[in-house]
Length: 470
Length: 119
Image (cartoon, rainbow over all chains, first blue to last red; front, side, top):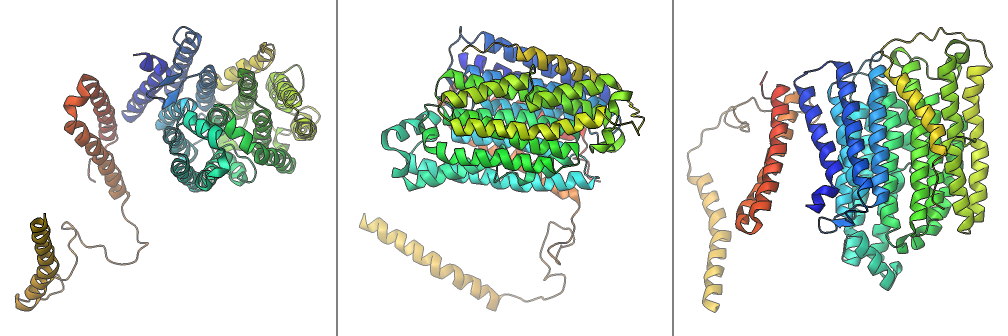
């Protein structure tokens, strides 16, 4: 019974997804009611997850279902971020599909099914469970990206994502098989125990297996050298889906990676050197790609690579205490707030068929829509890490953690990367404020996405005040 | 022990030698009626699809194939459960009921989308 109680948020989300699927199948409601229903269901799941998280000290379930799943405060917080991302994406999609083609009612069911996979991913404590959760999430996201078959850009995005995603999934299964062959266990706790006893390089099978698993994770978090898909796929996906992928998918995969690495830290101590170099390359390659973009969506996709780099800094300088997980959770939440905010603002402003999407298209937005421009500025400043936003606090905690863990060079490189990233974030702010408007920026559709944007803009400031307990 | 081995050896020998012999014998002894229609591969009564590998099929075949796969997997889970029904007890029954219920909602969805109406 305690097992089922721990899984309550997942069960509720799955039930909600099935309800939305049936409602979509019989076409009971119109587009706008579907969006509101899905947002409401996400909010309900969010509260169930929050209640489970709050009651966690009273029901100490660490491992459930024969240690296939592990529920921890970190997985609970990641679940909260994921469900909030789903809710705000559903809100943004309501406005987005008001002036864009390609709406199918099953869009919302897939959003909920993806959230189910992500919640399972955050709890996975065993390689095969992790793989199943990863595939539930990925299959739903493939459909979300490519639901509109008529548009060439979507088809290209979904083809690239599906092919490369299937390969990375295959790598993962192969790696899990090698690890099982080498260590005789697939549970995170068992892997840590065997590694602590004998060390990794005693078993060539396990070494190869962990390399393949690392490749899959690097693909999913879009770290260099497996980052090439991210710009095209984020560009081709509908705007609310891009926001959802950039935030929720990243949160879920990072949570799984942290669960795998920090069970007792023995795997991280092996991987730390590899991750160090990959992290530095990720930071600067991402920045280089973002500097050259003229399309805002592509710039945000490339900046997502850089944010994965910051999260890798946090992982490299992590230890097994809860403080490291808190820093990572805080960064994921702060990044999710700003990214969701800018994507819901773009869902409103991009107009019919995403016609306004390059930097030049937003020239002089501040003269026509001062509030929208101000909110976009807030989100961009948060992503760049300018105080007093949540993004600043998140970067501050990560760099502090790197310095206190003795990773001085990495911390300094992270700071340099932040300074570089300010250029392409401020470029959009300059375009909005210091040029004359050429466009009338006419907006159609119900104003749900702007409402969500406003909530997120307040949250970006509010969340920066959240005290971290150290 | 050795008697069983001999018996199974005889059986194996019979299978290996006799079966090809019978098949060869039918080719020589059986009646022959060659025609164009008879030489075509049999494909459930529809016109056989022999030709280029990249020719296009109607998408409804893929839908049917996917539906078949889903309910095929259902059977794969049902059989081991049925075999160990007594060991699993009530909790196993409830879990299986949930599984069937989930699949049933899938069937309702499929019906609502009209996939089973062959057009």
